[in-house]
Image (cartoon, rainbow, N blue to C red; front, top):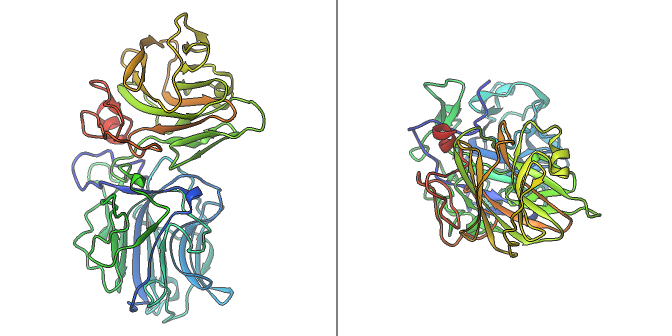
Amino acid sequence: MATILGANTLSGGYEVANSCRFNRADGPNMTKTPGSSGDLRKWTWSCWVKRGSISNGSQTMFNAGSSSNTQLRFDSDDSINFYQYHSGAYTARLATNRKFKDVTAWYHIVAHWDTDNGTGGDRMKLFVNGVEETSFATDTNPSQNLDSYFGASGTALYVGDKGDGAEEMDGYLSEMVFIDGQNLAPTSFGEFDEDTPRTWKPIDVSGLTFGTNGFYLDFEDSSNLGNDASGGTDFTENNIAAADQATDTCTNNFCTLNPLVRTDQITFSEGNCKFSNHASNDDTGGGIGTFGVTKGKWYFEIKLLAQSGNHTHGVISEFTNPVQQALQNKTAVTSWRNSDGGEVSVDGTVGDEDYGIMAQDSIMGIALDMDNYNISFYDDNTALASNINMSSTRGTIFPCITAGLGTTAEVNFGGCSAFAVSSAESDANGYGNFEHAPPSNYYALCTKNLAEYG
């Protein structure tokens, strides 16, 4: 099986500039309705996907139709479900046995529909990261010459939800392609890397023949994220804004908050860039980032929207066990504590100096120096505490945040911020989209930088 693309960390080759964030709570989708029918018996769909949550209801990637429909989605058990439904029954369905639960990586999914084919088992196919899925919990082949709803005249197409305000996508979509009238192999959209042959990576798809109702969503125009780059009719965006354009892509994967490593009272949203404590009591909860580092210099930002009680922003060692208990008790955490005048705590030991409490809506910059084992904190680009020694916090270090009941914060690792960024500062390699420029020689937590410095 090919490596799940935690992201392409390889130099050279085709680079994907953008993805689109789908924040499930907003009810986001893109839609358009073809005016004439394409080939309803043969087509190919391809997309790169980074999930925002798992086991969180069904999440639609692409759908055509309403009560009768053709759909590709993640089911609530985290399998991929590719099906056609008509008059209260499934007329075709592939539901994988394999579960897709990695929220740190990008998956590439290809679906074939070919009901002209005389062999029943070849009429629907699914491929993930260049390899065909062959093990299915449900394997119902469509009848020969059965028309699908994808590309049918007058039948609405939806990206990111089912079209009825349900089963919304949570995460990021990139390089979505629909080829009308052809079954193209996964190698039309990606390839195995020459030097690391288990790694599947994207290739340029702009030269493909898309067909009558084919399209290509590259998400490169923030003012028109539904733009069909193949020249066809654009999709209309609903509950999707320019700020949902991301540079977190299948060729440069960025750190986000990790929904699989957090205390129970914490929820994440906005592509895992927003943190909320919804506890029914005053329990402190927390979560960590998806990327850990052992060397290099790294920068990220946090904006405090609402606060109640103490909150901390900083880093945590992976050797803390369990992580949830450490977040709760603030042990093995090096962090800024926004209480008692503003303090820095290293593994539970609070320093003597008071730095002043951060104001609500200010942006904290955190500069982590793993080469010298120190950390610095900034308030709207003004240094609060510089080069705090954190040598007692060893091992792989992850970004973390902890907070009390009612606290909401937004995190920006550079790939897609939950707060509005007005100045668009990047690191010295040109990666990231920050409110404030990272300090010299500090870099965004993304796989391109990790490959060079991490």
